[in-house]
Image (cartoon, rainbow, N blue to C red):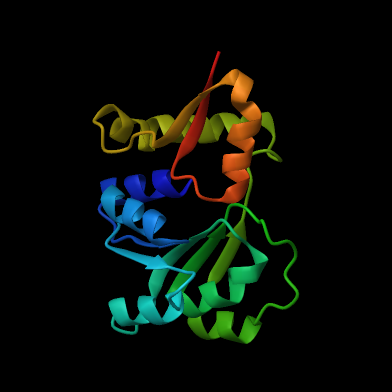
Length: 174
């Protein structure tokens, strides 16, 4: 999801700041067009965001981690910023600082495609066709493929996904 988000945001003309784990992934983010790529394993991403934005913060955070980073994501937000949670590998939120949200007039949304009714899914597909597909057609948004493996090596594909070192997708071929 991160690779796609970088490419789409750049196609829309946005300034893109990414966080990645490790030098290889940080470089991949830069190669995709990120204006600033931060290694969350070695750098304080909130401090890096504040420095890069002159203390303002970012307008939108696309969060694929969830609870573990929610507080820090709020710290990185600019006034009137929004956190969009699209995945949660870290479970429930124990505490949410509503005062910090109110002070920044921040909003948080959480969503998944799976739980939506069919008519909403169809509307999302239509919006993707209208708003994303033109960038796919002209090449600004493209699939990022880490590796291609035969179907017989599906267990290896899962291992690679679990180790968190992928850049893009693993494709299985028959």
